[in-house]
Length: 170
Image (cartoon, rainbow, N blue to C red; front, side):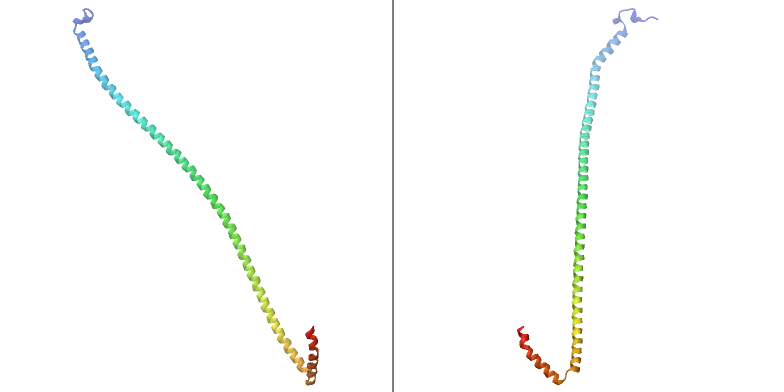
């Protein structure tokens, strides 16, 4: 069997006209189909571009937030160091103040103890003197009572009166 299209002129056969019809249809409908496909691809391109732009914007915002968080973390670490240093200084100062206060309290207690001891010594000395005066008075009274006679008393008084002007001049 031989192909009819190869033996005669092409426009005489039905295959030629089917080809021409398909070509015309493809030319007319192809533009519209290609335009629709192009519009659909353009819309998809715009959607992808918008998504990429949004992703870039979100990335920039995330980087800014990360930088802000790092700055806040660094500031918080610096603040923590300053707080610790301040607390250490205050602890040293408080310890020094407490040591000075304890020293002052010890000195006050020592001073009070010395004053109490002096007061006790003074009271004991007064009591000893009082007892010594009482004992001396009693002893002198006993000695005078035993050694003095009424005659000796008058001579002693006369002698004391005679010596009084000399004692008053001296």
